[in-house]
Image 1 (tube, rainbow, N blue to C red):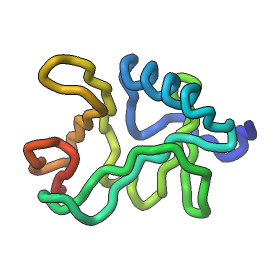
Image 2: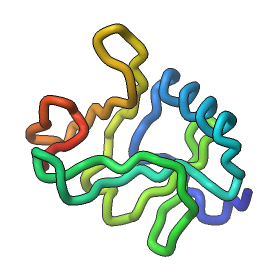
Image 3: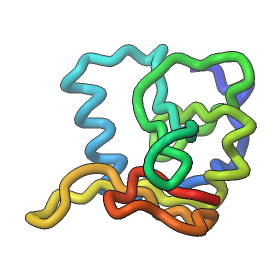
Image 4: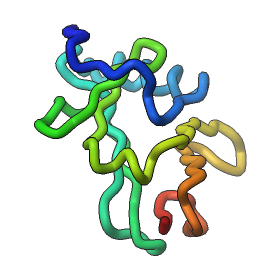
Length: 117
């Protein structure tokens, strides 16, 4: 893995639970090291914007970070919306899946997968 384009400090964090689940998913799905975790936003959702979270290859215009051994790609324009965000993984009776704690969100939907800024 080339470290030429890796920025020193990622604008977001992954909790221990999120890191553990992401590494497990990468192993189970046999995702190659050419792929990293894409984190971003897109228009849509009940609050205006939805989160993007999935494995993808690096694209032009991406920043690259490394968090706990996980390559993370993010379109540079999305940094404004994601700075300070924490991605967690919940595995409980009342909630299961990835959650987003975004200090830039002025409101979120009931399911927590979309927000407005």
